Length: 226
Figure: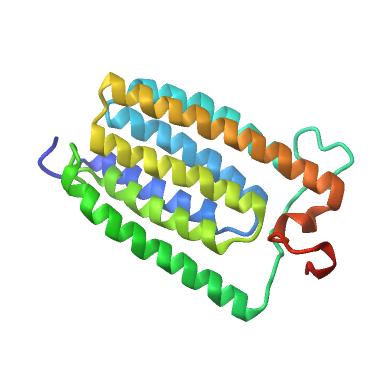
């Protein structure tokens, strides 16, 4: 551990948090997916900074390359076929439902804050000394809130991936960056990539069968979709 904030780690933590927020809350889907690739690239540097080179390599391959390709396939930018490409999240809903989603997102933030308050005491690395761990806390909370707030399935898939990165960062804080911990997190990265690939395939299939409106229907019948 270090006695005070490291300048490089602080810059990485600030960049990671800022890029994650753009990725989670930008309604322009192409830009949000592009920022996810940037986010995964910064995560690669973050793992290297934390002394986890195997995780840095896994993040580069699974996060930047493979998961990035999954998102652009879901957008219809890779092998679009007959389905229209996705560009912007234009789904709106009544104010009452939007308020309910916002309250749910705030509830997630409170629950994550309470849970992390008790987890931090058992961490190998102190978040007070490692800005990247603090960034992991913020990213985890914001990703859970975004998942609760958004209707669009692609934006939820983005939130799922950003959430996974935040959780893995917290796991590194709890278990350290030993070989066993890196192996466990690498398995998690593989599972997250498989989930992203399945999600991208399902999104394109929905767009092909029912159009882009199906991605924001939230389980409602077609005739009631906005």
